[in-house]
Image 1 (tube, helix red, strand yellow):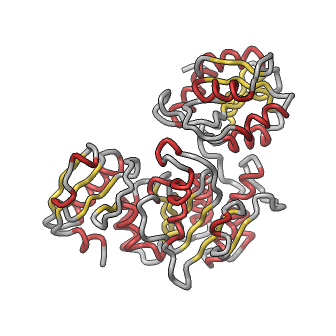
Image 2 (cartoon, rainbow, N blue to C red):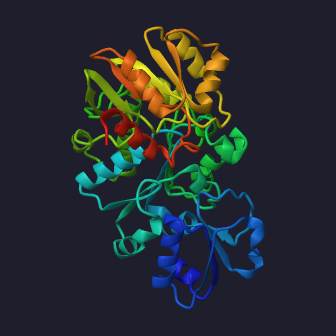
Image 3 (cartoon, rainbow, N blue to C red):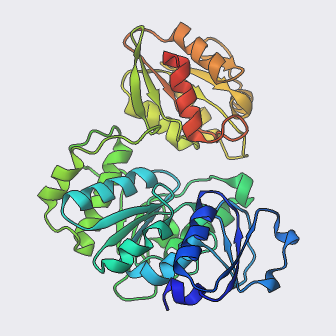
Length: 399
């Protein structure tokens, strides 16, 4: 049954009215006949689910209730288009990997769209996918989009798993379970699953396991071993699924792919200091990777909202990297300093990002690099990581 057949004539509550909620409303009005639409932005206890045939929930709303009437754009999309969807998730790297895959497919002549967490809401591409039977959807899937999913994509990628979003899920196990939904409902012989080698729970089910420490040699504009890993995943997807069999063409397409904003992005030089914006960094592993990827690294700006994730790995790294200066800000920066017992000239406390940038300019030598890689969420201080990155640029270079 198509999405339009399923929803036509039904009483539907759109729960959440952000970008995806507005997209859902537009889709229903233009594609579904005799549909009765109610838009709601309150709490779960403030509506009676029995009054509706379906409740289409926006992904950012916490709700772990099991009810077939509760659905989402992602679920509806997968029910119709799962067989030509490549779903990509992971704690880190999913945006770059999805964008790189889309770039390679298009450069190699494959009809494709980029949807989901990085692209437009998936139902915005309904008409294109319905009209072109060979078109592929590259779908970047966040944990929130996956948490209520009951239909997995035909081709699935789980890059890695680290503690994240504990403020939303409460426990790491619940967060991991949300991520696992990308493959949980794969039940056809031609379904395809690729996982990174730290995803122990799915290794036995995977068609291919890719090692983060593999000896890869892709010609990329992207820095870091993690991007060599992402590139290798893309190559494997293309070849294994038969979408692009010419490895030389895949490598050629990869070579001109540009870094996405706020993902270890070089933003320029000022007074001889190199500045990098890695605002996407919300976990310790990302901050460590940023320091390892930039040979000129001298100063790391770390800290943000404290969501209760473990910082032991980052604290141990900070102790070992005696060549680096760490400027710690906000709640989690305070916590890192406290738990690490950090004091002295290598560990500088800052009130906020503006203060951190000023102090970084004072201590970073010419020819060396200052990196914003907070290992923490932006919420509470900024709207999102994008805003945090843009503010960083303005603080360094001016409006």
